[in-house]
Image 1 (tube, rainbow, N blue to C red):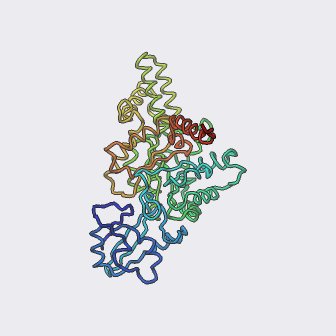
Image 2: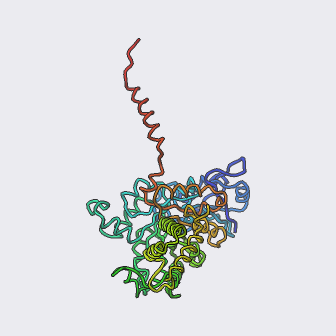
Image 3: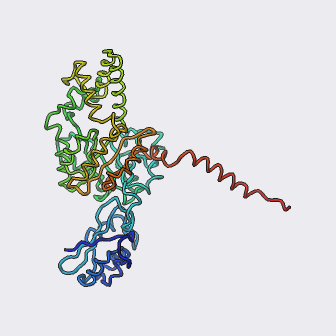
Length: 453
């Protein structure tokens, strides 16, 4: 079986450009309309020469037809979010297929950049202005309910009342080229069939081509102790670093079971680099690097350590311990209670996060680690999402990382997700205003009549 390489952008070493429709092989009977959708696709010269001799007809796969029907694709086009592939089967039929790939726009065109942008919101009004630029959207119950449905300022006139209504509207706005990650509302549900039942409405709304199921890491949290997070001081007794084995790997196993059912998985709540290699064993479609709170915590811990090293005042260590307790680094069941142990824990944490080096000063040490891992994994469709960012430096620091030569070969596996309003702040610069003032002043003079000399 031969796999044909298409190049819709017209790139390649050959001087003569070949298209699928111009190689002299006729469409299979009754498939003329489908084949016409890809007739303009570029074919490498060596493949064109071979196909003239070996191919008897050009046809399309059942999936090709299903994709076209699912998204009601206009005549002569293929939808965004799919790359065009072809295989020559033994009887000489060249079968054209559509394979899900958010790196592609309409008609098999590559997106402008390797990196894909994503929105971290469930607000259709926020998504609409940026929708044509997106290849992904992520949300979770907090984003859907707290930030949108139950927020009268966002959900104007309370037009949307259910999760399903929101997802239907988002799917309509985003179109076929955008994946949508929908998080499981109860990751502790013991009945797997009930989890499948909860996913089913979103699969119906978005189609299997766009739906990505979001499975969160749960660590030491389980169905029995999760109530501690919702009552009293809302602290968990169990320590994050010493979970029960069955609790720690429950989400890994859940992700694997869902993958076996054909779902793509967004394995979320990933903060430390050491989480990644084990997460990849669950064969996720997306892994994540959360950066905002992790970096701000590191900065605070480093300042507290600096204060203690400067003064040797134990009160600084008490403040450090209080901060670590408030951010779930320590817990009631944690063996780290003595101030000396607290000091060592904090020093080790700052060192692990490479905060005193260029590798981690920007909080992107985990991103760099995960991109390096993607270079060696046997999961060609797995991508890394950088998420949870704020402030004036997070996005510019990521933007600088995008052009680091080390990551040039994996930059097309990177997704950047943020609230649209945050991304909007980096579409402009101060000089834009200055130059617009000049341009508009010049344009205004054009309307002033000039008196004859």
